[in-house]
Image (cartoon, rainbow, N blue to C red; front, side, top):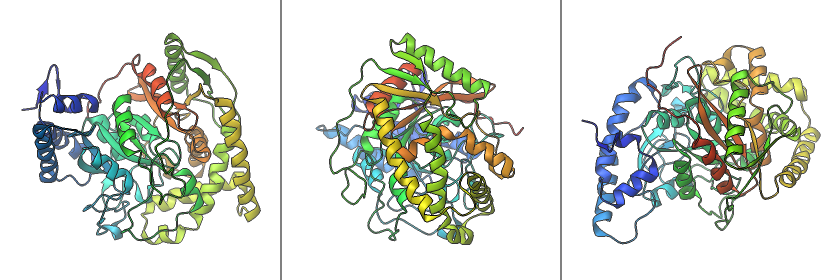
Length: 481
């Protein structure tokens, strides 16, 4: 029997509802854990979103949460709330496989800092989410764990690289999932699966792995672009996940040693950018932007269409700065990666070569980072303290499965369509992907970009969209067409 409260099962409750219910003893953390484990049993065999679920450990964490409630006193904010972590992020006692068969025995001795934050917040760590090998595709499959399906339609990607995280959230396996993002890997999967996904400001959430892990000299693009973020079914879920993961860490080369003050919500200027110059939005994408802009105007915000070509320039820089550094890692990818990641990267490099040439020089690279600094300043001045930018998440609806393996021409289209995903990491600003409903049987959504450390402002504006957007869970009966 499925545990329910009111008119919905426990697995369909938000993280905030679950935390409040556990504190009030409306239901126990053990009941919550059992409800989500049953939901995983019902949906994960179809979706393959979570790859390492240990029910006994989850129930032991839940029992400890119930004991804490019984004892009274201070209770952490996510006590008893199920959360998943990604297979490329260290969790004590679990494999950090990165989807690579050769690393199937790489058991972490300790938690990554963001996972430690979730644990300290009282979350029940319920499973590991799937991703592509090396987390470098917008599609989720690998030779170790297999393919993750989109819960709305198997013929379309659940996104990547945090595809397992997004699919599990949409399916109700956990209300919150940890993911990471260097080119859309939180925001794009959230879009593809109809969830909410937040990429925080660079430095807000530590990206450092535990000291017991093998030392890795992180390339500069990883240090300046790669962040951990939260995915959730609701904006409030993401808010709770983010605040748990804000973990000051002096070991992080770009991390802040303190928790920064977050923005104060108020009336916001919304600058709508439909096309920065790379790709015309698909009609369904355009319609999602129309809906979001109208809803935000109804909510009392000042909405206006603008041109912001610096976003297109930043997206192009992404394909220079990130790919030039990925080229230095190709020997490891060739040795340990699967055929899909090798083929995808080869076509990605070919597409980037059409912009930057076959062999970008060290001077190109240096000038690219110099230009990045100029664009960061321009965007910060544009945003000020009360402006957010509304864009598509992608110029296309969720891609067909393995579209990046369809050849160089299709890869060029994918890279052009993903300009909203690429521009943000280069500049280091926060951005959130928020659903706007469904179109033609697939989720639709928009992206909001905010000023640095103004995550609460973004969440405030995203809530205005969420409160007006039609939402429904997927049927979890993907069709193979």
